[in-house]
Length: 508
Ligand code: HXC
Image 1 (spheres, rainbow, N blue to C red):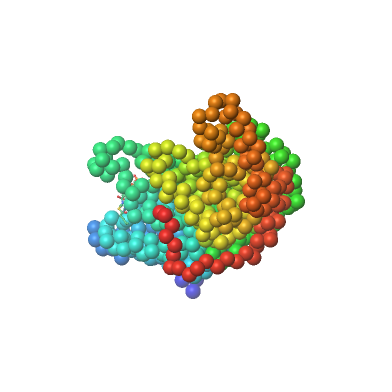
Image 2 (tube, protein in one colour):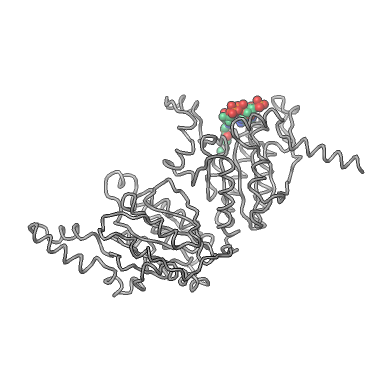
């Protein structure tokens, strides 16, 4: 018996060594942790239960029969994050460059199936060279099996991908179908085809960083939802995110103890909106002052910064904040902002996370660049996302709510449940000057000034909308947290039935 125990320990130790000490040292030399070290940081101490530690590939081509490494390039299993179950797989770059074989894929699909059955989030850590070249089509088949499960699980359990090294070829599409992608700066990159292929096909010369580094994907392509300085920071931030997320679409939002009084008033909010309507102010200040303990987790912070999307909590319950940001492009809605917010709204709706919208939007961004780029369709994505949402929707108009953007941003008309406005709100078809110049074309400057004043007095206030019941109440800015929190509590059991359909046809 003792021999058998010793044998097990030996085999475990060999598996834990992955591709060997030399490759582990090389991994550390690049500033990266190993697959197992990453899981140690991601999961609660001692909670990791590993599966399939001894799985090996079955490939015999190109001398592979003689090179078998237990685990086959991916560490899989489950554990807990602050006591809540999550399923994990972590690519081991020290074993065949983390490349995906048929056996490697089966390990991942087993975890995907279990996560779906157990209705718990799944987190994939990527650091790999794509399909196992020696296996050819068997690897491609494996990818297909992983992809299909990503889609089946979408909207049922949260799926998170963290890119911590190379992620190319077949490896990119699984993360792309998950809910969130995070990258590590300087050590990770994602692309379908690498710099060499790019040069051959298009004659462009680019580095891996320029083609698919964290900066590119968080600021230009919007593929990634955030980037972090190193492995440790990335994994700790993913733990924070998991704390905000429901385990599944039927679990309800997690509720954590909060020491922040719901009744907390914040007099500084009464002075947040400047007297000059063209002067910006930071909407993130409002989010931080409304959320429990000011604790928020921003999604896509570096992309389309004219809109803010973030998770936070009120009375310990997770909420999604969507807010126009007046400090960037005056908070205008453009294609990027619309897509960014639409995806966030749909995530929240799929997982039963109530949405709090803070609105200060001068309209949609005019111009050929926007129109040629499909502003109509991208703007419609956000309109669609809000309109189909059945989760509680609480909206506060802080200043401008102009034109179509007024309708889009969770207005009463598209399904807003409780819609508040601050006394500084201006709810109108457009700004006063533009409106008057159209209605009173040909009038002299003095006349325009007089009419502008008249228009401002009549329309640039919350009261015309309030008179119609389009806003439920004009509230004091300092009491925003209490008003929003009470509305959310009132809506906690909200039920809305949408007509039966196979699925909708959101303008993609
Ligand atoms: C088998 C691989 C591998 C792969 C790397 N390795 N990629 N083994 N299949 N795809 C092995 C290497 O042989 C090496 O083994 C070890 O991993 C580390 O690789 P290095 O090249 O030494 O590391 P580095 O210099 O850091 O370069 C990393 C890399 C490079 C950029 C990822 O390895 C690379 O370009 N790999 C090939 C990428 C690729 O073209 N993949 C196929 C994509 S096609 P030793 O024993 O020396 O340590 C694809 C199609 C699927 O994925 C489409 C489905 C939809």
